[in-house]
Length: 78
Image (tube, rainbow, N blue to C red; front, side):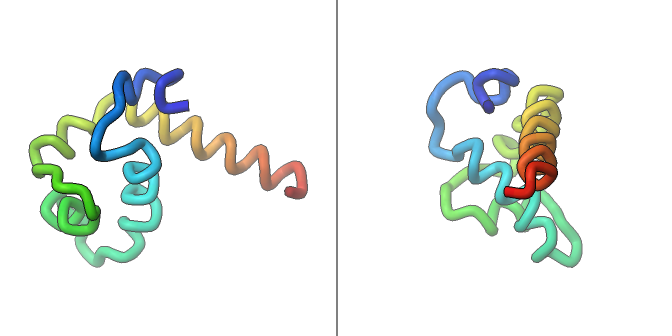
């Protein structure tokens, strides 16, 4: 799904799955989410700038596609 939305074009240290986890679960654990806090929350070494550069239109499309998949799965009673 990450490749289909253009979010991931090649294999990276910071995976699409880790990005989703950070955006969903990681945000709930942070009182005041910040790039510094997010970088500390992931186990992969990534800079604040590198993480900031991931926030693109393709990232938004990818997260929306993930949300739609979850909602479809929940709607099917699975």
